[in-house]
Length: 279
Image (tube, rainbow, N blue to C red; front, side, top):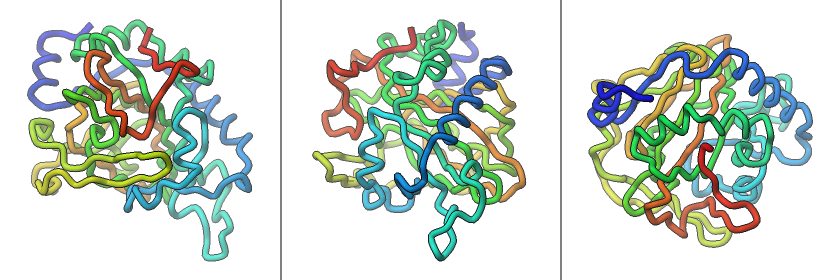
């Protein structure tokens, strides 16, 4: 599936952008289904927000219970000082997570893709195990910042194998909050580890290496249909979306079954819902 040049670029930079990977029809089906999930969500069930500010403290029961189900999370700026939504519910949701790829037929069909399985193999995942899916809205005007982080923080294994598959469902630009990365940063250390013991969450500090700054960060602008793949140690972030247009994306996180998946990772699976690959 991937050329040798693409494989070499991934090894060098820690990421790869593949244009036109998903059809507009496949994207439309996913967006329609996401809209239906949000439409059926009752805000009175939870006012949980998603934030990358002090994630250990922000990980409440609603978040922890989303590990093997499908739940909605609001943007940080969705509510006014009286606790009321400032705009329509459909324009207030930050993301849906975290098991749509296994529990929802539309998301399952999008994930179980022979072409995607081939890319995963070419990136070194001989036994892919897809642990998490997220539909990210990056809402116009209030789309929240996602601070610098590494995905291996949340999906630790020995050796580290987590790989991210990020699909642009709309054009992602600097204006509406595209991803930013540090090319080659995947060769650096793992800085933090997100640990779960029952319902207790801690963020373990492992390394004091500072996060990248604007002198080394590059934006990954991507047209709708593009697939961005990146290494679990690659530092990345996205700025707030203050533009008038959203930046919908769908993300999958997978590890290699040949590696030892940590029992302290926040998402675990058992025989009731076994972890599966791309095929």
